[in-house]
Length: 396
Image (cartoon, rainbow, N blue to C red; front, side, top):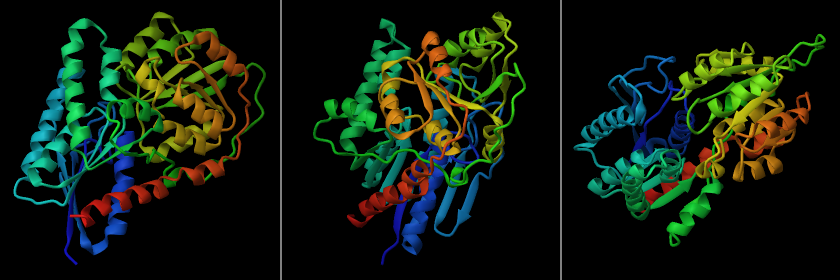
């Protein structure tokens, strides 16, 4: 049997910290397991760059049986859209140079901001290869929501044209959230979609150590948020007012970094709040300790149309912990939590009054969510997705 070759594109990959990184690592593992000796996988990604406060060195090249991993070195990111565009250009050029002279049966691209999907589409066309797109966000709608000034309309229109090009050229398209379907189906009615969501990674499948304890009278509850601090989360729009309203009752612990971390820090300083602790990102194997020590896990999405369709990857990790969840979400996430996640108090995004009301409904006890963990085990989900990708190579 002839060896099948797949080019795998992911802007983030371990040891970087991001939903795309964890997802890609699990999928690569599943592809190698199922593809065996008949599969050669080239993974092109970047040197760890997600957060300036979390830097981990990684080899530029790694060779394993049937796997070639290439990490592109990026320039120092100064932040903002131009900085991100400059970084992606280096990634795209690096991927193009790597792929020169190599032939592939299929190209896989996982993309949240559309451009990795554009890169994958371009390379698949150049190679005459099948194209599998994994869409993790609706970038055009997000862009239109965040930059809603008329001056940005030509930019939004340009990305809309790119989206149309990649969706029409792809052999197969996966949507990480079923909530994305109304958007894409209305624009691409002839396109069929799969729905392999994010899930619970193996290291989080075991229940946490039970840490319920007698609480001294007046001792504040420890509420933990762990994740990105960006436009999508909108922490700067909810956390300062919430911390002020619940001062004395809650101590927030925020672990993460992102585009709005400085904005959040400034907003907290202006209110002179001393019940919010901001910590830099930590390696994933250490985060479970913080989960164990927390009384409640906090989740929030910004109040924009695009975020009413998403299903936060962090929700799966939170749910697996068994800890109470306090979530500011709207749209699809609200319905998902109501159906799938027990002991979760939900309030509309960015609504402080409703957040306080929801907090009163939080039950301070861990619950058994093993059925959820089994249903959304990442290993199983990525195994099914890997089979679908490998089917593309067999049709060549």
